[in-house]
Image (cartoon, rainbow, N blue to C red; front, side):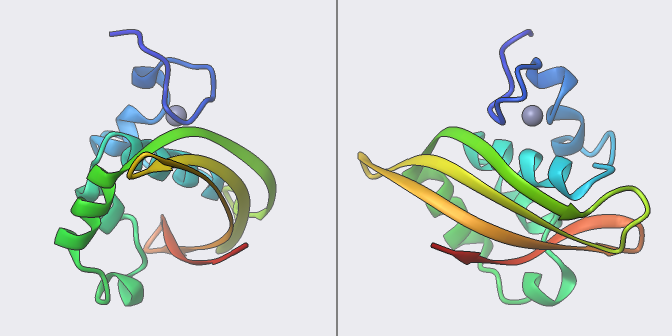
Length: 131
Ligand SMILES: [Zn+2]
């Protein structure tokens, strides 16, 4: 399979986000995790979205609602605007991005500044400021 990765890295899916989504590899940076979560939205992999949310926030998630949301949204494109920390040796990270989405047939531009934290060696999504 050589289709392009939904995260727009210009690499093929199997050489980009798929190993993370299948649990065969761990993202080394907050940006990689952000990209793989975007791809998971695009592929409706709610299980991966739940698994990569920080422990505290995960408790508030409703996996069924997340699954429904994944099905209602089409991810068109992703653009990373900036990153702060989030590297191999960091404990926290911030990724700011633009995502073009189609929600129930309506185009929208989602801009978010997301916070990430490293938990037991793995990057996890905490939350984000939108607008
Ligand atoms: Zn990717």
